[in-house]
Image: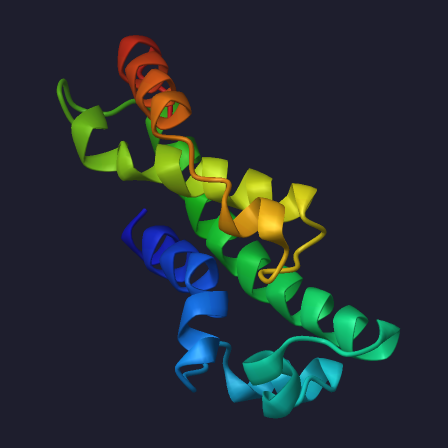
Length: 134
């Protein structure tokens, strides 16, 4: 869950960090999809750049999701009593990954940037705690 949270936090802050000149998408991923640092720093200017951005972000988000699924598997296999609390941060990451999917993996999409709803997060955390599910 910790790796998933770290990756999703960096994805959530992509637009903010890009404005400051920082890039947190691995170079290997950027090269794989033809994403230039200029596109990441200034946002996509055309459909080709947008596609490269979305594919790169999808790849990184998929890695985060794989870590989250592993945590969910651990929960379904059974955890010692009270251990669910250590995995609750995964709920926030799950919500963030869903919002990123809805934004078509574009971290500059205004709906994604403004997607953090504290009430929804609190309700999701309560549900996860009551059902012992991440």
